[in-house]
Image (cartoon, rainbow, N blue to C red; front, side, top):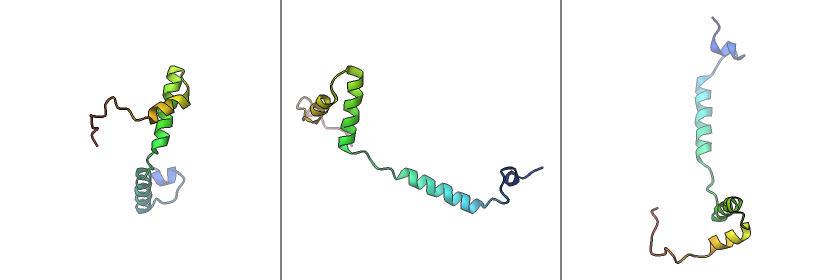
Length: 77
């Protein structure tokens, strides 16, 4: 029976190195940058514009204006 390493075309497999590579990859993936407030506003405005047919710039402006409608309600953090 062939060994898995030979079947894949490798002579030997260094599992210590493989675990190190996997660990490094997971750590790198976990360190993603958070999107900026401007990027979130742009994404919401463009998505809404596609769905409603409104102008993206107008929706962005509307989102930037502070709303006093629910000012007394605090969001959980």
